[in-house]
Amino acid sequence: QVQLVESGGGLVQAGGSLRLSCAASGSIYSVNAMGWYRQAPGKQRELVAGMPSGGSTNYADSVKGRFTISRDNAKNTVYLQMNSLKPEDTAVYYCNAAGIKRDGLMFNHWGQGTQVIVSS
Image (cartoon, rainbow, N blue to C red):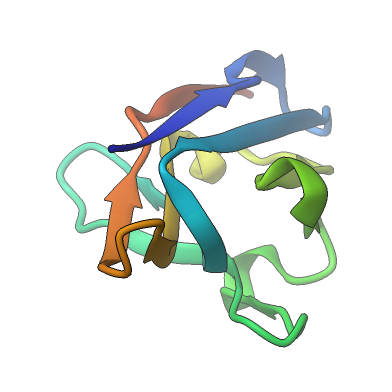
């Protein structure tokens, strides 16, 4: 089994910062891609930032220059540093990880989600 545990959400004023963390654990052989998605009420889940295997990064246009994704491969942990937060960033943020389990099977898992609320 593979588990993803997220932390770091909360309530913040516009212009503030938050840092989200997501740790993958369990029967993991390797974690390849990791990323963050978000879903606002009444909207579809969207990619916020991703780190495919190889170390590259990609961001949604709406967060470029404000959010930074990073990874600690030794800890199978991905972070999302969110600066200059705006009310429109309010959403439930989900971590996603894809890789290979110790039994050789691939996995693609989601975290439980963490709420981010940005007040104006």
